[in-house]
Length: 421
Image (tube, rainbow, N blue to C red; front, top):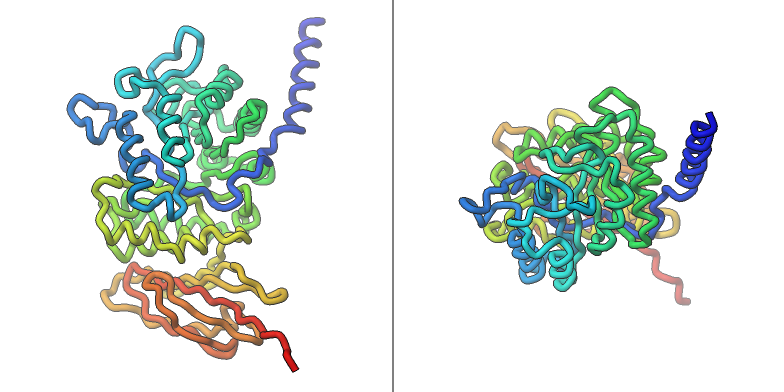
């Protein structure tokens, strides 16, 4: 009985401490994170003997880090290179610590981290709140404090924590607990969670208030696949659940619809522009998963479009809202800076889901979009960097939108010049 009471008391004390210290209010991810992740493009290819160019190895991540810098991605704002599943050895070391596969990461993770940092980039890592990762490598259960300190020792800047081989009912305790141990290392690390997704697929209602206080970003929906159908299913989910999801997003905490697949195999040019614009207006993390060694110039230009990135990174941090959906056409809006008094500028996306082979003509009065400033707006199309001109609140936007395509506009509020008698 005495032992039981001691254990109960220690658990109660720990829970009280965790309730005070869980929140990752460490000044990180004040805008949606941007970077490069391995998973969607390279998956769990560990065959470095027969496929050394595409296997999960230190060589792959070093090459991507080099290209992020030399090809202008870092300058555009992409500043993270992150491991995903399958970097690990199948067993922990004799000291209980995680260790990488010795053949594919012979220099060790700290050396890889140092290399990526030397390129001026941040370094990210993957683990799982379970007995195993999704691909069967060691998970963090029963080693959370040790693993958090190991990541700090390796100078990790970003931790993606998956949720395979675990009980979703335990995640309300486990994800915050690991966040607590990350905090205790005193190394600022962005914390990416899969917590709500695993609960949703098990018919549980996620505690989003706690999730948004614990995690910098979190997954709500299934993994993205290399197809337009997958992209549109994610867009539908975020539109259909926007009243729940929009209030959660803001500086330091973001809904994550998963990676950008632009430049791979499944999206056309128009569909690629559409994914970029939709992820931008939804204030989503911009995490590329593409082979930067072979990407075609037109897709590289989409990923590096500075005007669209600026909408995504807007300091207000508001997640965009779907305000119109009819006959295959959707309109999404997002308030952005600059402001004039209490009136915002706006980003507007017109998405054409139709596939009937001809562009759709869309007319949208500014008032119907919520743009009602007396001073009017300067309107600019962002994909092709074209000025449309000045529109008053009583005028309408008129655009032609290609099938499976998008038009993205920024409507910058006009400022009243000061009166000089």
